[in-house]
Length: 230
Length: 181
Image 1 (cartoon, rainbow over the protein chains, first blue to last red):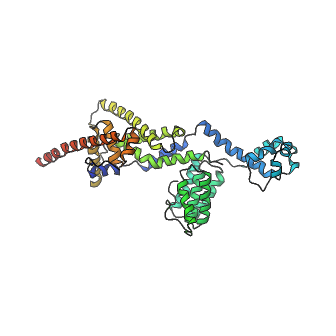
Image 2: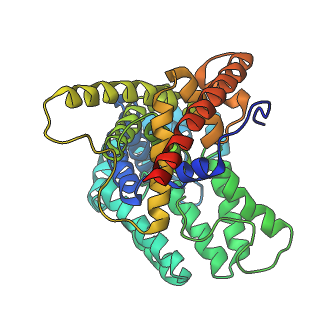
């Protein structure tokens, strides 16, 4: 590790310096400022466009094939008109009812407006942060049921929020704390699968391992404390 | 659905969780007062936030450390200018509120470290702080400093020797004078 060929400093000096640290308030304040910074324009466009595109796909998808999972790519042919579907390979794969495609153009615009009108105002980043801090507070206080309720409220208000994976991780913690280990494991698997580059992946994976090992219900001992910063 | 946007938020949180205290302590031990270290740490992390997409995954600490060194140098220049300005009182290095005995001892030990560290060449001081106080390995220190490991080892040896020399030079006279009075 360190080079011991020369004399180390007295432990009193080292310990004294190590015990000094920043105030918690400074850390929180800095983090809040960091989170308030708008992402670069390129990312900002993605933040807006991806959920929007998904919303459009949902609207179209539910109209065209209510029992299939919506997919942007799969819906393109239907938006381009009936002839497009008839001539594409998707026509044989997807049971799309033909008559509804008689008026292709409004399909993209009308449902989008309708969807937009139905969606509640998206939470601001500060509101999302505050909501998740409430969840953490409930978890720290040992109230997983209240944490889950707070998460439900958060997700209603922030569908597709920017802290979605953090909310998901908190839900995993809350479920594990309330004895729903298998459900926690399922969600942990989803988090790992959908966010492979997330810093939360390693911690989420522990919940999967815990469930696979048949550790039973309850909170796993090897994972972080409920309510800790995701 | 939001996987493109979420990692930025999560990454910022991870950045603070993993490196905030480290950067703050490094800034303190590089000679910044508490309040200046607070400001400088915020500055470092805001810079990282604005450049987040340019920081390679796994390279966060190196990036933050590099920014911290520049910010510390600027802050020290400002402090030096403040000290050059006329003042009626001697510069106060620390809070003057009464402290419990243990806290006072810690404060005095830190002041002693800072005082001696201040006399070391900057590059030696940095290596000393990273290895002695932050418990980094020589290879990690060399990587942060952007120097070969052998150079880091050599700097550490010189830093320790100089530090011990200064410590020895200060401790006995204080005891002697304390005993004489």
